[in-house]
Length: 219
Image (cartoon, rainbow, N blue to C red; front, side):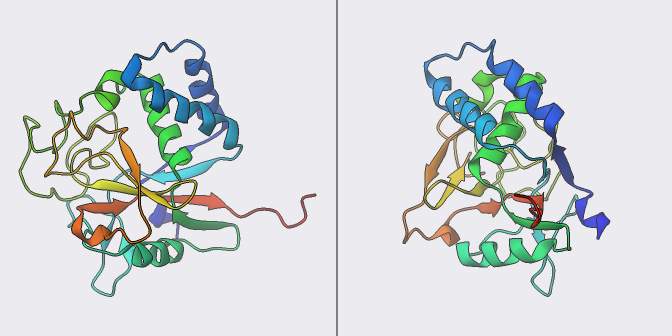
């Protein structure tokens, strides 16, 4: 099952510490405060390593999630379908998969800013200079295949699809898609989903993480 982790990046203790150190020096502008505040919360709440998908997911003919560069991105799926398929992706005695929560996603984003792969201005104010937004210079004006545009050190579909993640009370969509403008829906933009919200109408994909199962003998 290890090949299922080929397109996953590990956020371990050392990387989380890098984000923590960056937070001590960062001075966000007004429109960047919300993102920095969310990263600060993530650093406090996440005390574990996890692996996060670095490209957008695809669906096989039999309906299973898989990852492969140049493959068709899986859009047009319901929230419940994403929840079920995400839980089935990676399942061993030690590890399990699920939809990422906002803390896990934004901690990874914070790492990329800390490593100067991105700027706060790009992800918080205007992301249209790269990716596949409607007004990005290199936009294809259609949903790109998975993993073909690198932005901020990874090819996770910036401006291609909105990212579905777990939020504190429900789920949320982050960033923007190919039909959006990068200054309106930058990378760090997100909004919580109302209970009846239909994500089938949105170009969205779930972000998966793989986590180690808790040790039942602890405590």
